[in-house]
Length: 108
Length: 523
Image 1 (spheres, chains in turn blue, red):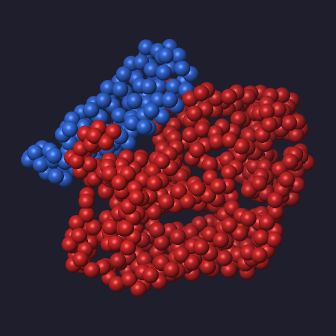
Image 2: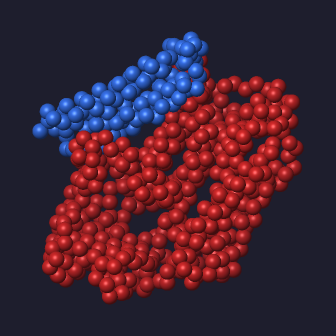
Image 3: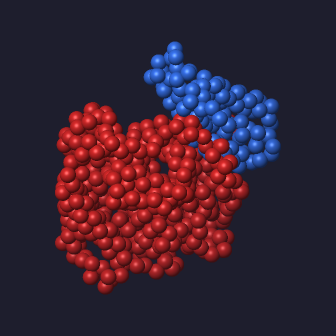
């Protein structure tokens, strides 16, 4: 498994180290939270579509998102290229939120 | 297992985890220390209340059927003092709090007070005590506006979770080092051992307590689902999830039906159990609602099983159990609250909570000792700030806490806003001790001086309790006042330990940098 520890030097030829660290920290804080937000929102909509009571769906998806949150946060430091990290966490978060909006319009 | 784990946790991954582990700890360690320490105190908030509110040391009450109609209603009237009552609630006496706590909302402001179980109002306690000062400091930092305190605490808690997980990844030789504690070896080495030992040994508790702590306020700090399905209305979500009931005032006056039959009916619906809190909403109105919460002491779940009655007819309006997932959420929350009646577990929660402080503190100390090598004899501003924060959040926080308890016994009863003076003193002295730490940090923070202050203050608290209330340990034993005796015992133990530590530290020679530099630790 290739991780940041190995590739730190390779990736940063053009990017100053301060910026690289800032990218990872912001991905760990905001990227991971956005991803967890998307997961919780999409999960809630999905649960409601599947016939769960709204309070049940919200609680279940939030609990799941809470477990994912710290792991996603750490993954932002472990992923070899932080651009990939931002793409997955940020992009994934946006996609999940969009999907939850869509599910909200489809649902009853 | 081991071979698979080796592959899963590569050396590179371990190296990558080191940075967030280190810096999350260094930047948020002080805040986490506050959260863990105040959380540990909150386990015994009721006992600290008895110590800080001597007027409420009225001895054990039988938690039998105290009549609400005869004992509580007159006290509510007295608190309202002629103003029209809007809503009120009473927390009924229990084993750990032998008095009732009343809160009344009138058309012209709120009033609160404590009363004995037969309805005798006590003079104002003049303190926030454990329940209203240390405990809220634990979860909200007393920053109520916009739940900003919840957000900060939960942010630190997620960092704590990440720290625990990354710590396990870094420390892959978890079982080998499990039995390693080299206390007589090199100082830095034993700091790391202690850090690893508490981290590994108490890991299940730390994981549980951190995650369940966030779970309690999850709908507030991660309102994504609430946003999606409830239009962002957290209150509506809670009312739905916890099966709450409410209705607006009608404006038509109507008398309140007797409360005691409602309590009996609630007991019947619960199938046993004791009432803990009785709320009356829209008091004196035709649309008044009575809510009765169940006491939590006989189970883990934080589900208070509220029963709603029509305040005029006394009929049950609503009694529903939450769905399975919400019920799970309540059990997780209850695991954190530890409201169940179990003394050995309560002590374990307290000690494990303090072990969290040890984990965080040794982590910060280890960082300081390691960086000392890089900085040499004259440490830089960064190192000194971390040292001051570490000192201010350990011995400094103890000083502030103990000073507040001493002030609680020293301030005269009659001074205006006494409880706010106490709280203000806590923060002033805390800031003062952090400033002291920052100024006096040369090669080391002023551990020894602050430990001496802790020892003197803790001892002073025991003596002051004795002088101002006449309750010395022998009398406490004689009257079976275990709450006050327990707080005094922990204070005395703190004084003894802090004194020993301060003496040891005063005799310790300064750090020998030449030998420090020779030793290389693993990451």
